[in-house]
Length: 56
Image (tube, rainbow, N blue to C red; front, top):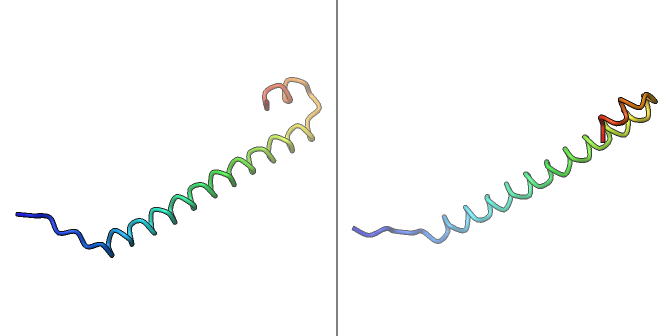
């Protein structure tokens, strides 16, 4: 018994994996940006040194 591979299915999988990879990459970048903004906002709103020390 052999395995039958349909090339177009492989191509579809590659396209979908590439799409998901970009989606994950963009979400990671967006999360990093949001967290950085939150830290900057926190530092701007609180002058207490213990708050500022705990956000770095």
